[in-house]
Amino acid sequence: MKKIILVSLVILTLILAASPAVAAEPEKALIIYFDYSENINTEGMDIDAVSQASIAEPERYRDRSNVLVMADMLKERTGAEVYSLHITEPYAPKFEDMVDGAQTDKNENRQFSFSDPLPEWKEYDTIYFLSPIWWYTMPQPVRSFFQQVDLSGKQLAYFSINRGSGNSNILKELAEFQPDMEIFAQYLLSAMIDNEAAQKEFTEYLDTQDWLK
Ligand SMILES: Cc1cc2nc3c(=O)[nH]c(=O)nc-3n(C[C@H](O)[C@H](O)[C@H](O)COP(=O)(O)O)c2cc1C
Image 1 (cartoon, rainbow, N blue to C red):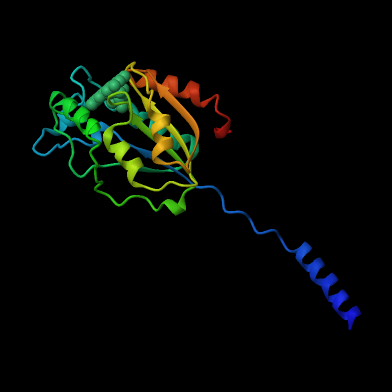
Image 2 (image 1 turned 180 degrees about the vertical axis):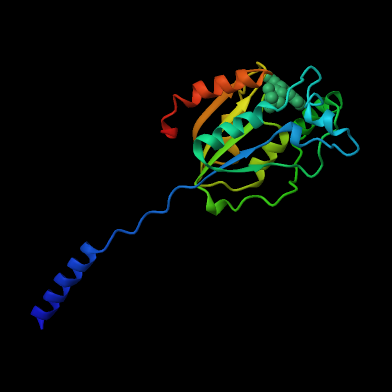
């Protein structure tokens, strides 16, 4: 009897050793961005004025915001899916009308809601987040997003763009809002307005990153 059990065990071991290893699920990534030009109330507006994006900041006359440029670049490099955060109450179309309100929103820690269903987080391991800097940190829609969701166990890279003030608070706030999320990369672009300059600066940064290789 002992001999039969021993032989069976040996056969079982040989079968298991010969069977192909079950492939681990590949890591799946999602790009999320918050872009001002996609969160403006354009009702009743001339569509050309909207596409110029000059509404966002008066001196700008260009096709696209730099956040959109950066999102496209990351998509090209990573092949990740893309999700754009849209708030249910978009901003007033005139820059001067929204800029102070955006500061009040931050000071009062206003909680925004989002018009599209949020992604199914369990499907993703890695999140690449993109946003401008507003009032020295994440725009309040983004701050409230990170306060509302649970990204425990996810790996996050946070990329932002500013006009020189820096982003002193972002890492501290992300750690506070999502204590069980790992931040593996963080970069602040200072390319200002020009799309080509932003593309060049982001390319130079991405080219040095091991997590993309
Ligand atoms: C409401 C608001 C607040 C801003 N606050 C800051 C700031 O504190 N520091 C800064 O450097 N830039 C600030 N900016 C400028 C943005 O960071 C700038 O628009 C950024 O480059 C976004 O790029 P994009 O619109 O080309 O995507 C602010 C812009 C807005 C609309």
